[in-house]
Length: 390
Image (cartoon, rainbow, N blue to C red):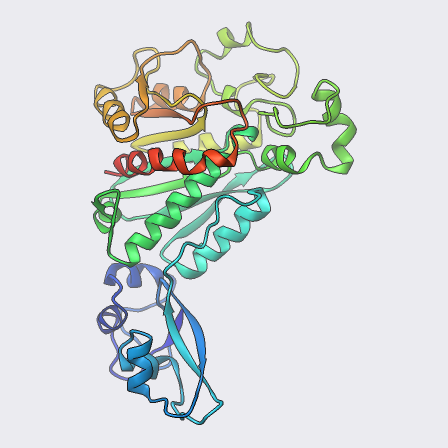
């Protein structure tokens, strides 16, 4: 919601008027000078939108404020005129009380774009950055929340048919944003304390081309080529790779030459490492993101198995074991130090930075996991993701 500054207004006053933490109002207006407000200046108020009320006989400002659970001055602030003529429209500041993201819809790249746009509008302290592009030139988005020194990256949908991980991460972002503006807890932890302690860098869809292929089928101009890569099948539900048939989570230089000897030698729906490490635009963007920010922790969301993989060749720091056990206690998942698997993003991160990295395998079953598992998975994941930010 946007409001126009009046004489004598302050951000502190807006914080009290709308019951929004001051830091969130300040951070929602980081693109403009709000240290000294000017009359007529536009200011973003997060967590609110504007609705309207048609004036009826007997309406009063005090009565309407009480009815809509607002301070009277909140109505005066958003209405240039408070002439209560019957039939006229009065603007009402409306607090957002429901989530914007619906994670159980057809969650392709188009839906992700719509939800990101809406979250940015209603929670403008959320920051968006494009860190790269996919093979088909779809942008790879990184969403940032928080201002603490500790940096945590959480990513989803490295693998195309694991798109339910994007739904989980987007639901978490929406819950976190709402808890912040309402000054509430999330999984028993005060949301504002997480905001002050950590910066969350969320990459909700690493492989947008692949997700769209699984959910929508191949683009017409690539249909013949992709069916060939898919072993002649027109059903792409088992496809994990990017649109060129390269498995993005087997692209990183962490025992790459060893893993190459036992994996497919040509592009296909899964497990092909590519001709060289970090050859794909998506993996280049992910590597550059980690190198640029130097994350303190990294979580990659995958499916399935209800396991937390936290080690790599003995290079993981001592704190990784304690964090893994903490995540296991929060989620009910099993913490597993080593598996016979290499070249993943988590593996490379641990090798490169010697910092805690985790691959979280969500849910049970056969990929792609059905959306009917969403509620169970999210119940397990929310407390784990909160713990990751502490």
